[in-house]
Amino acid sequence: MKKFVIILTIIWTVLPGYSQDSRYSRQRLPIIDMHLHTGFPHELPAGAPALCRPEPCADSLAATTDPVLLMEKTREAMDRYNVVKAFLSGVDISDVHAWSEAMPDRFIAAPFILDPQDIQPEQLRKAYESGELQGLGEIGAQLVGLPPTDPSLEPLFQLAEELNVPVLIHTLGIGPYLPHFSSASGNPLLLEEILTRHPKLRLFVENAGYPFRDEMIAVMYQYPQLYVDVSTITWVIPRTAFYDYLEALVRAGLGKRILFGSDQMVWPEKIGEAIEAIEEAPFLTEAQKRDIFYNNAVRFLTTDAATEGNAATTHR
Image 1 (cartoon, rainbow, N blue to C red):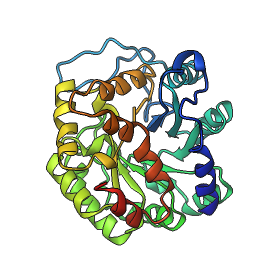
Image 2 (cartoon, rainbow, N blue to C red):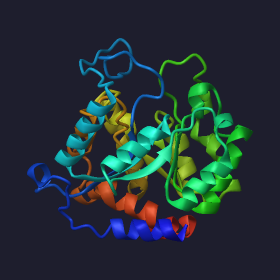
Image 3 (cartoon, rainbow, N blue to C red):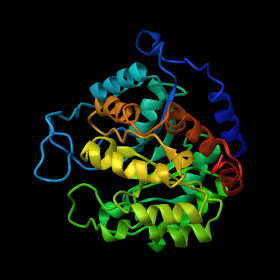
Image 4 (cartoon, helix red, strand yellow):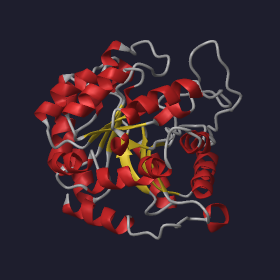
C-alpha cells in the first residue's frame, strides 16, 4: 500500500493549527477522529434519543436522521473542534463516498461490515488498490452474533494484512439492543487467534474492549500491533466509569496505543462531548492528551511494519 502511505504522509504535514474553519478552532490543536459513521447501523426513528447505559437512564439529545443535515452538523462539529481527519464508515458505502466528495481529504473511507457473507473480498481489493477505500470496518459482525474468530471474517483479515489496511473492529461487552448480540463473543481474548495468524495486521478495537479491562490489557501487552479507540464510552456510560477504565489502561503503560474516536452515528453533538471527556480527564497530562487526540493515530496509520513500529514506540 505504498500509495496509501504516501497519501497519509502528505496529510500529516498540515500546520499544527490547521482547520477547515478557523472561526471555530484557531486556538485548537488538530484532532484525528478514528471512529466516525455516516449513520446508525440499523434504522432508527427520527428524534431517537442518544444511547446511554446502564438502564434506567435517559439522554435528551435527539437523533439527526436527515442525511444532508447529519453531514452538515458533523462538518460543523469537526470544524469547531479542529478534527482534521476521521476514519469514516457506513453500512451504505455510497454515503461514505458522498461525505468524502463533500469534504475532500477529510476522511479515511471504509466499509461498515455487518454480515461478512455480503462482502466480496476481490471487489474490496480493487477499491483499495484504486484508492477508493483506505480503511476496513467497523467490523460489526458481533452485532449479528458472530465472534471475531468466525471463519467468514478470515478473508477480510487476510486482505487487510496483505494490503496494510487499518481495521476497526467491534469487540466489547456492550452494543445496540439487537436479538443476536452476544457480550461473550466480544471478549478481546478472542482476538489472539487473529493476531497470531496475522502479525502485521493493523487492528484497533472500539471502546477499548470495555468492560474487559484485564483481558484488553493482556492482549495489548502480548500483541504490540494492537491499538484501541475510546468510542462511545466517552459519552454512553457514566463519566466516572469511563475515567476508571481509561486510567487503568494509561496506568498499565498503554497510553501510546489509545486512539481518540467519537463513534458519532446520528448524534453529531457527541463529537464535542467525546473530545471534552478527554480534555477534562484529571489524570491525563497534556502530552498524554495530545497522544490520544493525534500522535498515536499518526503512528498507527503511517507505520509500514506495524509490529516493529509499535514495539519501538510503546514504551517511549
